[in-house]
Image (cartoon, rainbow, N blue to C red; front, side):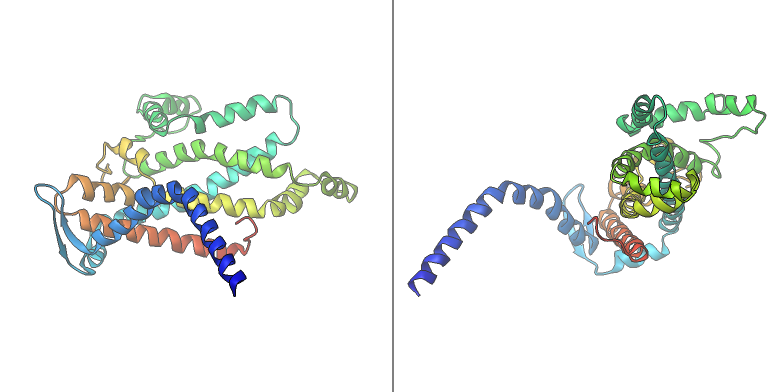
Length: 301
């Protein structure tokens, strides 16, 4: 009994020391992550006035019901889902192809690794401004299309093209980041597998399809989940492209941009903006769960 009491005191002392060391991290997470999340949940159930005197009025689920009747919310969700459906597979495939190409032992592969990775090191705001200059009606992209005899487009002002222009830019900018992850994973594939496949008469495409792709399945799952989370949160490129209004004709309006507009550009809609943010978090969570269900690969997590 006496030994048990001493052991308990020692455990309490060790636990206290542990929590003392962890206190800075717990405090930071609580203040900057958990606290804002709980406050956003609280706001989503209230009609909030934060300017000219703070006031809260509990409205229950009214903010969430309003989402279903808000035309702009439906347009932004449609644009965001379309964006995710195109960008995530495209950037994943491009990253895998780039990584496999650079891992093939070609001359100058270190130089091309640096060149390919440069877009990832550049600020997204700067990249967007550069692409807006290239997308100008008399810009570089249209001049190149003219040279090869293809039709030119109003990349920024045409509602049918504007979101696709942002997609192209983001695929080009984010694929190199995932390429680096694939490159690291490719180093772990045993060379003996490729040698055995060569003895069986497999060509380069067959080795890539039947060895490389299956072996990289956990990494692909990670890349897809990160891609889904990142693309659902598209904001800065859309904001800069449209000047903050989601135009032309709401074609570049995304859910996060709409949340920003309701939260900071409209009076008295902070609660509704919080409800949109909570709904977006639920959509991302569900999409991630569905992807993991399809994949069945959890070894990386």
